[in-house]
Image (cartoon, rainbow, N blue to C red; front, side, top):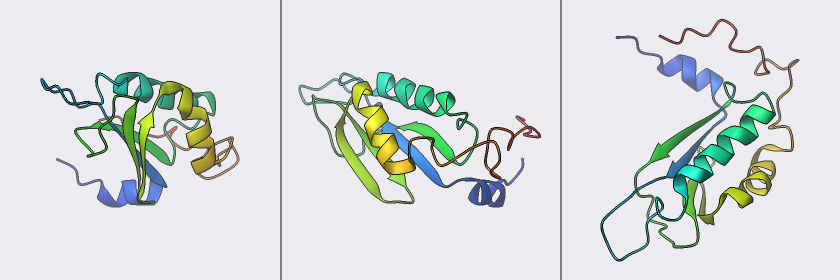
Length: 122
């Protein structure tokens, strides 16, 4: 087992959490509201900017307490920003407002496209 806490703290600017919670209930849940599709849209937005393995990490999570039939709940940490009703169509505007049009990354920055060329996937 390897403790990689410091490595990730130094690398990550933000961690995007998207609720994909599914429950057998008459109440709204993010799975039914497109949570997985929202995760896919976020990952695609980051990949399009060569920012997928850089300073922004994306994870699915259980309930964030912002349930809605109109879209998924998203939280961006450590910025402590919270969104509800997020659909895949909202992702470009949401992420551009949070990270800039190019995710504040380019191949020349320390977190650019080549930042993880030595990344150990294991």
